[in-house]
Structure formats: C-alpha cells, structure tokens
Image 1 (cartoon, one colour):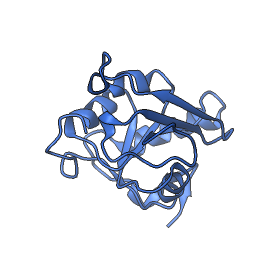
Image 2 (cartoon, rainbow, N blue to C red):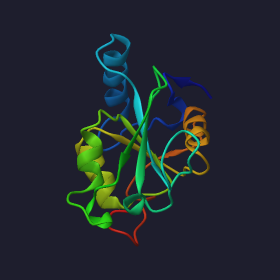
Image 3 (cartoon, rainbow, N blue to C red):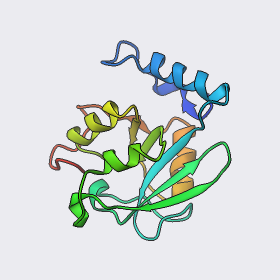
Image 4 (cartoon, helix red, strand yellow):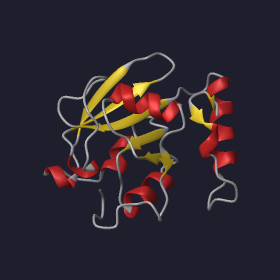
Length: 157
C-alpha cells in the first residue's frame, strides 16, 4: 500500500458515483502545479490544534482544525453551525476555507452529500489526535465516506 501526496491509493474506488480517481487526479494536478495546496479538516473536541482529539459528533464539535499538508500550517475555526446555535451548516463554512479533504469519525449521509457538492472528499473512521488521524489517512486506514457507511441516526453527524 502506498499513497500519492497523502491520498491513500488503496482506497481509490473504481466506478464510483463521481469518479474519485478523476477528481483526485485533477486535484493532484492542480496541487503539483502550485495552483492549490492540500488542506485537510478534522472536527476537534476542544480548542483545536494538532494535539487535540477528533470529535465523535461532527456537527456538535466546538472547533474544526485545518492543516495545510504542504506548509504544516494549522488553523482552527469555531463551529458556527446551527447545531452550535449559529447559522448555516458546517460543510458550507468549511468549504470556504479551501479544505480538500474532511477526516472524521463518522458523518451522516446529508453531510456527505453536501461535502461532495462542495468538492471536498470525506473519509471516516478517524480516532485519536489530529496528528494520529492525518497519519492514519496517509497510511490508507480511513474509509471513503459512502451512503453505506454514513451514520444513519444523525442528519448531520
């Protein structure tokens, strides 16, 4: 098993609803040409940051930690979504950060579709710290989110 620019090669699916291979290839092309940087976002339990833990309930975490894998810059944004008493949905404001990939423990089907519409790839099964989650994703230990593995009990988990 190997990865390309952090994309777990073993998790590429053929014939998916949206061709994941083509989408990731186009993204890699832009990244390699310097047009874009690779950013991942992880829902976090407290103040955010590389040593914070991934939150178990995506829509109700207090923060989202965004890591630029090219520069190692870390940004933390507060959850201003409707579950936290604010307006809007997390996929809406996360997409404005330039995030390419969402890494989380679980996610409802509605959120998965909203991220797909925003061009953000979602991987589930994350646990541990942000640092642990990024390493697990790079090693191909997280699964691409699908309707089959989405959390059915929550609209926007």
